[in-house]
Length: 336
Ligand code: CP
Ligand code: NVA
Image (tube, rainbow, N blue to C red):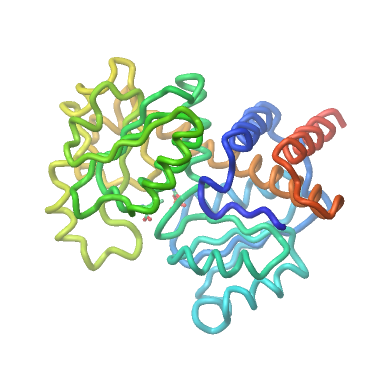
């Protein structure tokens, strides 16, 4: 079975750790590993706008010795003219992986079910798992081991970032809290999935409506735009609904003394976060943005190694095998 990365809990805790460890090594030796040498091509498809994701995948695939193929849906046959699975069956004859930023999660699942190459979610309405790998890498760099730390997301609890925090932080063994208006709570199934994962890793999940209760004593405070892509028609209603969920110095004062602030960007200063916080000394947003590059390079390397292992043995690749293969491939490339 081909391994894909459509949501954060597609990786186990051990696999997530392996990808983050690989990202650390790739950051230390940026051009040392060329697993896409050939070059192999990777298709990166955008149904929505992007700056960070577009650039980090383009540069990252190039760093790995590969050839990035950046496709806008507007100029392709996707987006109503061809099904995701038909597109994928064509692309798989020519590329080694497909990265797709889209609206519904169902399209990603359809594409993944119909192809032999790994499919990576570069943001959907439901999840943004590549961003979360970068965020976890950044938290490790600034605060050390992930397990046991408390992370508080404040704002739109139903958005892709909040739901990805639930799954990714629970996978990492963190205590994850969401503070959002009741009508913008995360999907019940996502909360259940995060709770199940947290029970395995020693983490925990808390969803509350009081932003102060969410942030109290937290090690990491994070927010995201109140108006995600595709929600522009609801802008005024959302600005009114979320006005008590702004991250400002008063809210940050409830977090741990050494707490850091994160935001995936782009940010609307003065709305979900004040300039004093996002541009202040606790903000680690620029490292977070840079780490998209290193985390995604590690993810692509790991996924391709995991799928090579699966094909070679004609059996299900275990986490250990995939991790060992990815590590060995990187070590070999770095040595050469
Ligand atoms: N954080 C993020 O995904 O940014 P872009 O929308 O610019 O890719
Ligand atoms: N929640 C935001 C994230 C942007 C990177 C959106 O979907 O627009």
